Image 1 (cartoon, one colour):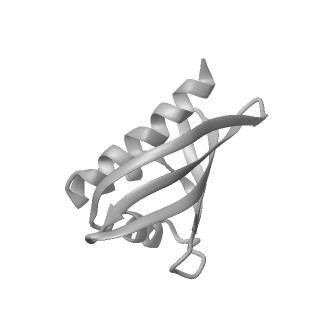
Image 2: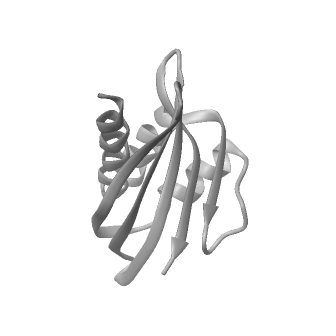
Length: 119
């Protein structure tokens, strides 16, 4: 089912972020749509794909737990995954509400929008 596909994709993204930065970058380079928007609490909006890769794949994540993962379909080829995260980044606790919007493209699901609001 597509809901599980999108949730799995989101979880794979966090696993990639836990790996080496090069592995995270390779994963997100394959998942990002041609046009992507990132809204991260500690940065201004990012609308350039290369800058989005730099911002997302440059953090030093040590651990994470995702809570309340839900997928909502917005149409036949669009879905939103939303959840909360509790993590450790650069030895500091981190918690946020997260939303990711995926669009189905000929090559599969692509991430078009990712937002994290710190709690």
